[in-house]
Image 1 (cartoon, rainbow, N blue to C red):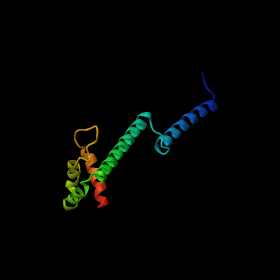
Image 2 (cartoon, helix red, strand yellow; image 1 turned 120 degrees about the vertical axis):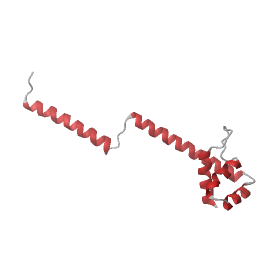
Image 3 (cartoon, helix red, strand yellow; image 1 turned 180 degrees about the vertical axis):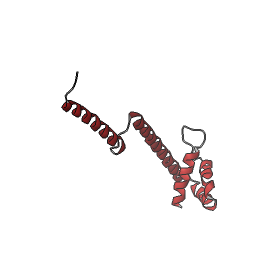
Image 4 (cartoon, rainbow, N blue to C red; image 1 turned 120 degrees about the horizontal axis):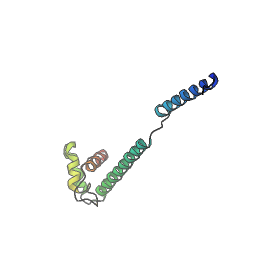
Length: 116
């Protein structure tokens, strides 16, 4: 079956328009595939979870009766030892863990060092 020239032009225009819309949508429009959306959601959840754990670490430092001495030790020490001091104090050990989390200790020490 031979299509008239008008139909051929319309079909070519529709195909080209679809390609342009898809290209613009995925580049400038912010469209993403389902896999990328899931990856971004997982990353946001992990970052949120870590932020909560760092806040718990800071709260533990405030509630610790020996925190003034530990903070004084942090002030006297080099910044690269602050995370180890926080870990040794037990502030970075989450209630469901048996060992301190090094990343949490590092971020917690960073937040605590901003306060003193």
